[in-house]
Image 1 (tube, rainbow, N blue to C red):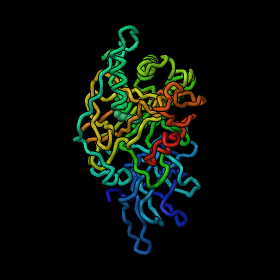
Image 2: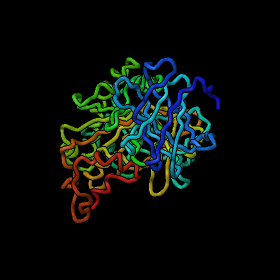
Image 3: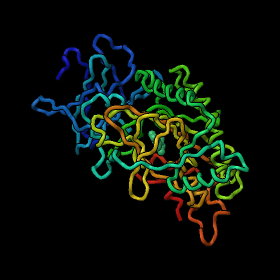
Image 4: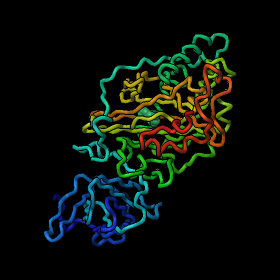
Length: 453
Ligand SMILES: O=C(O)CCC(=O)C(=O)O
Ligand SMILES: [Fe+2]
């Protein structure tokens, strides 16, 4: 062990009452000679856990333990905690040792087992081995050498130019029916602006952890910085960390989660958000027209108080990318999703039939995906595609997904004009499908299952 015991800060936890889960809720600083020193943040990569072998006084380091820790400043937290989930049958006692630079912790039992802290994989990029909690079973792993999908490239500017829009609308319909997504060009944003957007995202994720922690998602929230909520100890974590923000309506924004570092983040993302409103509306209207519907058919169903929510994804390089997934297979529960992909690094794959395809990258294009709620409203004419993200060992990857989410009070069901004897109603009307998303995602299920007739 590399630590000098004289300087090491340590705590002890006894857990005779919990089978394989420990939630540490009390942090008592026992920094030698500095008992009142402030606790800035956790660095779980620097915390070592040892199983105590009673009687022998020998400690054995636990390597197959998954630490799902909260990386967050404690300044604004009353009850910071770290959750330890072990895949061992039972843990009896643990010795927790933190590096000298860190404050140490003494743990006390709590009733919070099973709650859901976020975790971060940032430091894992530099580790030689993939922690167990991220490793997928053989059958669920991905292969990067998949065939390339042939997404249609659609000129968004042509979609609304009424008299001449016919061929482009036909291409849109065909593209969406074939792959569930299209690449949109001529969307009104310059390549320089998109470069700016990617730049502020990369700058944010490359900030020191302490800075990012200022925007951490809180326990019961989905907004903010973090990773998957941990809902069960069998859950496999994504090799990814994220920032989740509501962009629109503006009064729903939670400004405390909006990074002020880099200083241009807010301004750039605010402008991107305004562009997203325009792009989404154009696409949804064009989707309606491509099915010979009144152009407002979809937007009216989804309501004036729709939401735009943004997920900024960061996938660190992984020492053994074959074992993990950046994002598990899922379909988006939105009406549509507009994805700004990394301009260089691949990783996104789409499922068609039972074969995975690599997404095409066109650096200045937006990838527009059909979400579950357009699948329902179109009575299944457009299908929401299942997709996943692979990682790699060399390059980090970013993406920005903007979800157009129908008003939670609006009922979404198949448009009456799309139902007849040849196309009977395939879905029940649903409300607020998004509420099911996170739990279903972790269980490898799709919220749309609840709407199928
Ligand atoms: O990173 C990507 O390319 C896709 C991300 C994604 O599917 C999502 O955020 O829902
Ligand atoms: Fe997605």
